[in-house]
Image 1 (cartoon, helix red, strand yellow):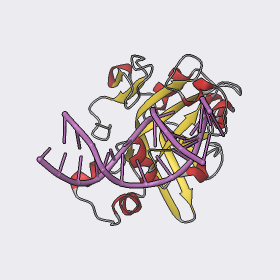
Image 2 (cartoon, protein in one colour; image 1 turned 180 degrees about the vertical axis):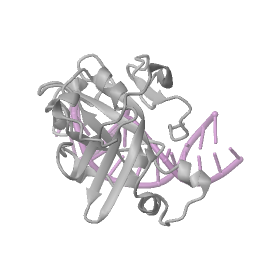
Image 3 (cartoon, chains in turn purple, cyan, orange; image 1 turned 45 degrees about the vertical axis):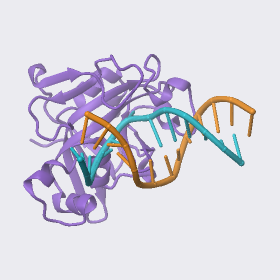
Length: 199
DNA sequence: ATCAAGATTACCT
DNA sequence: GGTAATCTTGATA
């Protein structure tokens, strides 16, 4: 099967639809001779219109303006003084919605991910499962930072590849992690029994 | 100018 | 189970 880049239309849709369909898709990052890729196994949706936990709930600011742009761009933010988190913007221009990529299953570039995370290229089985099993971890592994905020996912550096949709019975829905507002919205989606889902 | 909070993680008991 | 680490952001003055 040859996978193709997800088209703009994939992203210009309802954030909950995109969030669920992002499960199983492949994120690729190419820089020079290096290539990273991973299969998306856990996501969360954020909708600035009704969701107090979304960065866009307060309206447009310098930090969140990418989220108000058209879908298919990357929104990367810095948090807790230490970590970056990586989001896929969805919907039309003017809509402040995005999907947080919370965990991926490593595919290509595993030794490089290991170096980025642990400063070594051989990892124990336990460390392997810990490479990309969280939003801050996967950004560290892929070396995604503030310079990637606003990256067009239809460009050459970072993009997503299509894959078969995941059957509904393999998707677990739950409440989001690490937030203090709108805590009851069931907008976290992850692959059942996947070992790379965050804890 | 100052401040509190934060879409997290690693390490501790 | 708990919490320290670390710094940007947006709000208030």
